[in-house]
Length: 482
Image 1 (tube, helix red, strand yellow):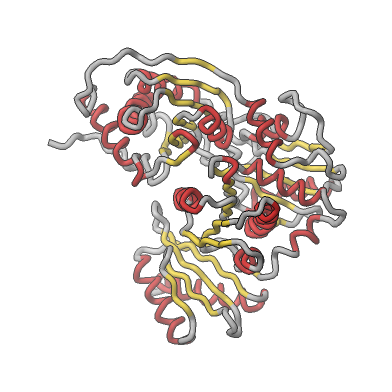
Image 2 (cartoon, one colour; image 1 turned 90 degrees about the vertical axis):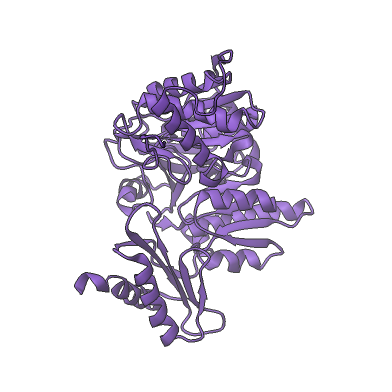
């Protein structure tokens, strides 16, 4: 007979996320810890799990419960305390240990979550162990005993280690900004973990040498209630304070991090947002040049809704470009499969071979600072080189039947533009670009968790983009008026 516990509402395709304690309680965290040890760590020959947490008040208690579950299976736990998600990936990579990061990123204070990884920061997702973790955890919660018949074992040990200084030194070793021209940098930490990592990496808080950077801090106080604004820079409203501060301080650049500080957004000296696609192209060019200097051909990963500028600009080199679906699990898989030097997403996740193929916003920020500081022009001029087209950004529409809506849009556009190319790699992409006028493409993707269709549009100029965006949205939202 099947059990009664169902964790499918909080254990998603890539991670765990839920309201504390109603959905993610200490008991659930303990069960997930034990299940992770039993389903992933022990079968793969591991002996320890490194665990960190962000600034949410619920973090330490959930970590303690999770550690009890892990150690009950004879696996040791190394606690690194407060850290960013990429700080946890650093710990997993440098210690060659499985990892668990307690964070709900930019979600409100009542949420928390867990991101699990294998040694070397390799992901654990729905198809790579997370489904089995969920199944075992549900059995443990139902039965109060192991779901796989394992007998008692000697409990693992718990230890504590501070890796912040090593994390900061490692990132600096990958991108040297010590010789750049002096830069004034406004950083909005959003009361998230960048309030800990920025002073360590870009400043002297971890005992490293001073850099030619004047840091102007915004909301560096660690506070999981997010008293100033949501720690999600993907939403334009959350960039307003940073944009104003950059202009007011006459700064060279602004950086905004999300709650767990694994994503980084960039603002130029005029307060204009630099698109993540432009950052992907900029960093990609730097990594390609580094590979060429070493006599290697670079492979770069980008998802299908990054700007056409990314394959246009990077493809003009000798680099190999790989286009993938949206989502970090797909990017990380392709990064490892192709031994890619770099990967970028529209959501401001940036992945690096030198960082165990994992994503780190801080390393991307160092690349931007190095590129800016190694030449005399302002960031707006530098970014303009990588932003030749007009993009809508991601627009969500609530729909009741996504498949029917997508088919309606497909029929309309393939009828109107018979020479357009239809691609179903991730949702539906319709392109009217190669040698054709007007030049445009758009992608419609259904959310995995909500009744939403996500639209991204890009075109050769603003007029074409605006018309296409409005036309597609009118078709998408047609059912509301029916």
